[in-house]
Amino acid sequence: MAMAMSLTWKWRRPAPDLVQNGQKFLQRHSSNLKSGAQSNNQRPGFSSDFFRVTFRHSLRPSVNKRLPQRLRVFTTVAQGENGAKNGVGVSKGDQLLRCISYDAEVSILTLVATDVVREAQRRHQTSPTASAALGRALMGTLLVGAMKGNDESVQVTFLGQGPLGQMTTLCRDNMVKGFVGNPACETPLKADGKLDVGSAVGTGILTVVRNNSNWAQPYSGTVPIYSGEVAEDIAHYLADSEQINVALGVGVSLSKNTAVQFAGGFLVQVLPFCSDETLAKLEDNILKMPPLSDSNDVMTAKKISELLLEGIGIGDYDDLVSKPEPKFGPCTVEELKPRMVRAVASLGKEDVEEILAEQGHVEVKCEFCAEVVRFGEADLQHILQPSSQ
Image 1 (cartoon, helix red, strand yellow):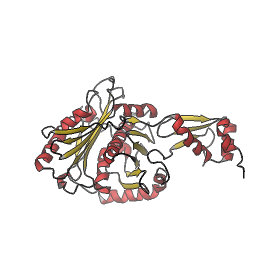
Image 2 (tube, rainbow, N blue to C red):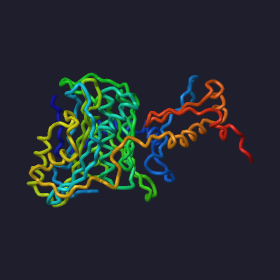
Image 3 (cartoon, rainbow, N blue to C red):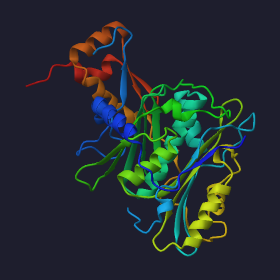
Image 4 (cartoon, rainbow, N blue to C red):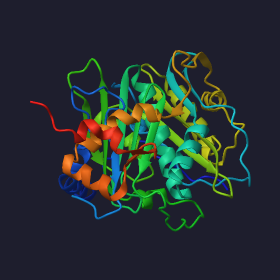
């Protein structure tokens, strides 16, 4: 089934009522967002602690000024995900590719992240709608992170009022991970039979936090959620908050048994001195592109680049060989344990003793990875022993 494609050719500010609602929502939930921000002395990238301690008893408390007006925001959005096959093919490996057009007028990032989205679906046991939403967010975050360059982390948070709940993704050095508040979220299909990700996300606010070890403090920008379709929201954020104009497209193809069949995307930047002829051809190519959400596992990052630059010409490729291929993570238990112990210590000695007495262990879950670790009394002795003064 063909993907519906939404193209925004020029920047339109969100309607005043949308801005007002977003600002009110931000005021009510600013403390929730701050909990995910990184302090200046933390390692950028994966230093935010999103852990949940499980109790079985009651819970306690770059600017392109020459970009033509018609391309101020240029987004292509996968409106739904429908696979054409019953099964899932063998992935050829994820890849993030950067290339420049022959005359250095257009810069393109193309991405295949099938394994990343499959791993997210496996870890979080997401429904089809949640898989599509989280997959789009993971790929959008990967593309923005690659656009920003080395040594920079990007955290994207959708704090929407829809049934999906909060959706947060975090990327550094081609490693990305994320979670949704309600992995079982399902919404009625659209009239065309597509998954309704926009309704699942709902209205609210989108916050992007960027950090670099060389910066005095992180950069944070917040805008109202524009449509809830993820790619369109991120593109509008870049145009509104960072004055960067891009074409951004992401899509997740699901098989009839709801497994991830393909996931891919692209991010296009028009460079200074780009000719009107090249812009017109680029627009035409994006309109003619087969929907990413209808693609299968034979689609590659290079093929996406060729489709985007058909008739324009491809110059140099950079497959980002200095970085690993895109992966979900890092999620090893050994990396998580020290931060999990700090989360347990924040409960206080009395609470930890009470949990151990009732359960025999303290169970902690990483929201990003869905990894669960149990700590026994021996693991928490430094918390339980009185401090020597």
